[in-house]
Length: 350
Image (tube, rainbow, N blue to C red; front, side, top):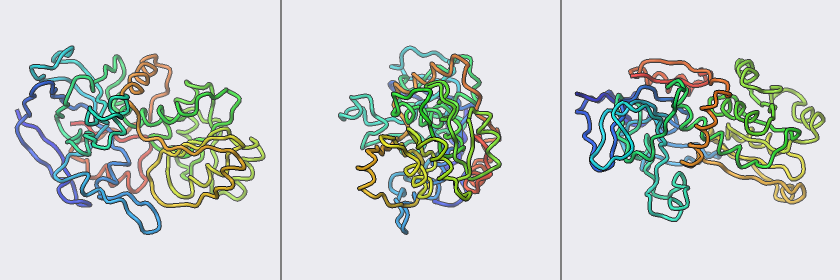
C-alpha cells in the first residue's frame, strides 16, 4: 500500500503531493488511516513560515517546522497497523489523536503538561501530521476513543475544542451570573461558545467583526453578538454589564486584546488564546488599580482532552459548523482560511 501526503516543501508555496510507502510501525508506534483532518489557523502561519508579533517583528518558524513537513494536527481515523509494543489497541479501532506531544522526560512532561514542553514533538509541526492518507503516532496513549461522535466532529476536539476547553478551565470558578465575553467566532471561538453553557451555565456575549458569522455564533449559544468597531460598542458593553468577569480572546490581535482588557470589571480575568498577531500596550497602573489578571493559554493537556471527550460523549454540545472537502484541496483550504472565507471548520478527507 502507498501513502499520500501534502507537504510544505517551500514556505508560502502550494503544498506538494508526495506518494511513498506506508510506514511500518516500530515499538509502540501506531499507523492511523486518516479519515478526517481539520484545517487550523495556525496551519496558515506554519505554511507562511512565521507568526506576526506586530511592529514589523515576526516569529520565524522556518527552523521549528523543517521542510518537507506534512501539516495538520486535528486528526481522526482508524487504526490499521500497530507496533509490537503497542498495547490496548486493535486494528479497526477509531480514534482521535492528541497531537501536542512532548519529549516525555522533562519536568513539564512529567507534570502532565507536555503540550508546553520546550522540546516538542507535535504532530503537524515537528513531526508529520494529518494532511495525509495515513499518520504515524508514536504511542497508543495519544489516541482517544471518540465513541459515537461523528469522525468529522471528533477531529476538531484535538485543537479547536481542546484549546477552548483549556482556556475556559482557567476561569474557574465562574457563576451563571458572571458576564463572560468571548472574542472571535471562528472555529476555536465557536467551540468556546458551545462549552461556556456546558461548563458554567453561561450564554456568553460574543465579539465578532464579521457579521456573516453572527448567526452561527447565536446558534452555538451566544446571548448577544456585538461589533467592536461600532461606535460606542465598548461603552455600551460596560454600561450593560458593569464590566465582564472574564474575557477570552480567541483572536489574539492588538485590537481584540485591547477590547477584552478594557471590558474587564475589577478583579476580572483576560485569557489570551489567539495567534492572529500584532502588538498593543498595557498600562501597568490599570492592571494594579483594577486588580485584573492577564493569562495566556496554549492548546491543552492530554488529561484535558480526555475530560473534553467525556463531555462531548454526553451529546449535549451543539455541533461545530463544518465544511468537508478532498485532501487534494489542502492548499485551497489554507488560502480560504487565510482570506477569512471559512465559517466554522474545514475538514479534509482522504
